[in-house]
Amino acid sequence: MSGHTDMVLVDDDGIRIDGRKADEHRRVHIEAGVLNNADGSAYVEMGKNKVLAAVYGPRECHPRHLQDPTKAIIQCKYNMEAFSVSDRKRPGPDRRSVEISKITAEALEKVVLTELYPRASIDVYIEILQANAGTRCAGLTAASVALADAGIPMRDIIPAIAAGKADGHVLLDLNKEEDNYGQADVPLAIIPSTDEIVLLQMDGDMTREEFDHAVDLAFGACHELYDIQKEALKKRYSAVKGGDEDE
Ligand code: CDP
Image (cartoon, rainbow, N blue to C red):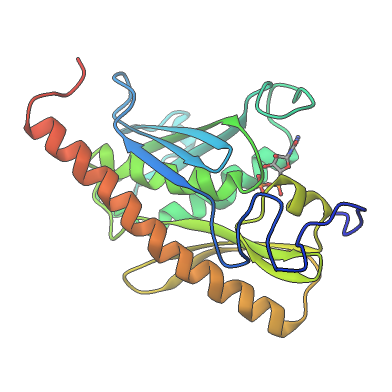
């Protein structure tokens, strides 16, 4: 998010470097139930982002001192593979992945009926296989489909997408160049049935009007993503019912 580049990120016709208009998100593909050995799983592509989410549980919480006698805890691990970015990412947790794991778990706690499973843990693993900006949103989108695929009772599923500002334009779903050289990035996640915000961050600078516009764009796109998430779960459910589930 340097805000400076010689690269033209939005041309005179308002078209971005990947051919999108300001209010267009990248192509989204979601598949539920892609891993046999997890209780629930999902694979998400958002443009060039490729993300796998796996869910285990509810199961006994370890270490035991983390147990909550009133509800389950959600333990989330967001991890970027070493090969997911152009400069090899040093394996293992860093400040960024600890932060993203925390905000993802906090968003998911708003929809999972954790009170049904005292002392348990619900473990969510998010693996970024390929990154191109917006991975925390793609990860959260994948994790909520994986939780639903695991059959864990939830109030709703969470879609997430970012909007931001690059070359002075408010843009939906920034790609890597727009994120790196743009002026602001605003990831948003909502509970679509109530429009409650469960994740909102901001990196960079925008005016109040630009911020409101970015949030509006992201809200609209979250509702579109929500339909794609539900379609993926319906497809998975009809495959299981039809007996063509992978063994
Ligand atoms: O991925 P997201 O936009 O949620 O988070 P970010 O911290 O704003 O990172 C933006 C992008 O920078 C990532 O999606 C990666 O493409 C890239 N990045 C990288 O190349 N190397 C890192 N160690 C971290 C991020």
